[in-house]
Length: 348
Ligand code: SAM
Ligand code: FES
Image (cartoon, rainbow, N blue to C red; front, side, top):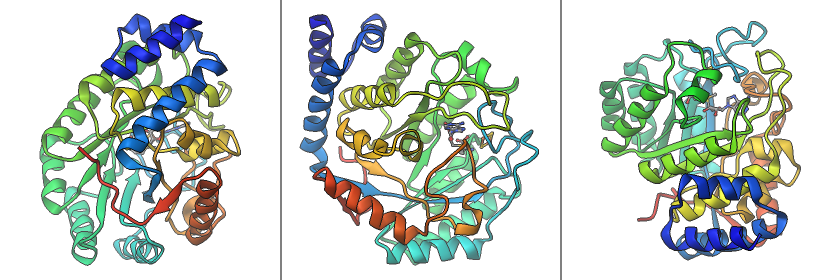
């Protein structure tokens, strides 16, 4: 076991390990080595961001999707999903409410929905930026051409979230239908970075067929890309997908990957995800204590929340945004952290 402690020390110093070394930690970690890792992750994070936890207002504006990712509850073939789209006015209303609650980042997330042409997205982004010049806009709307990304950037979008899902091409093939490739996903991510977006990649922990080696490959990819954000949460099965009977990812492995990611990219913006709060009642608090520094409460209108169901038993679908923020504020205070009303940009 002392070997794992040594590897964690080495990672803290060098910010990178060999693939075999990452795999060794992932296969051999224990609750003692985890505590050792998390203490280092907290120190590194607090050096850059203190005890501040940034909030992002998540606006889930469409659950139509042309894709058919095998894990996803809003995939094209999920015939029972009740589909919805928010109008530009509804999106602006979400921002207005969010702004009043202290949000200074709005995340527009949705399925890959052709209804929202580039022009529509440009119009929405421009309107939000014109009305709230002190706020950041993040897009999370999937794989697009470099040209489209450039238009979004010129319209004022600051950040883009596009999880790579897995850095191993064979594993990627087992999670996605033919036609979706890791190569294109990675092309998107490098375009986004080059265009000056604060860029977020990320992956699910415990997705079907995932190995310790795959997780090591995720860390190597993160180290190479040097993203500003990394979204990591457990895979959770959705009843209306081919993975309905698969097991969910575990709390322990998600926390481990958060801690390791913090040491690989010390300044990274790292959310304690809603999915993590779904698999454990204290999941988000534990995520922060393992090195995360962002939470992403939902700002979508309450009547559509239950329809953006990527996985089963998703939490907070019945609450108003104001209740969520108060609840998260109390949760963060209970562990000695505080939610801040701030854009929460990446710090160099
Ligand atoms: N369409 C955009 C995209 O593909 O990036 C954004 C929406 S997509 C639903 C956002 C993320 O949800 C995906 O990147 C995936 O990692 C996550 N997700 C989908 N299904 C999930 C599940 N069953 N459990 C946990 N996370 C899931
Ligand atoms: Fe498109 Fe999940 S398959 S958002």
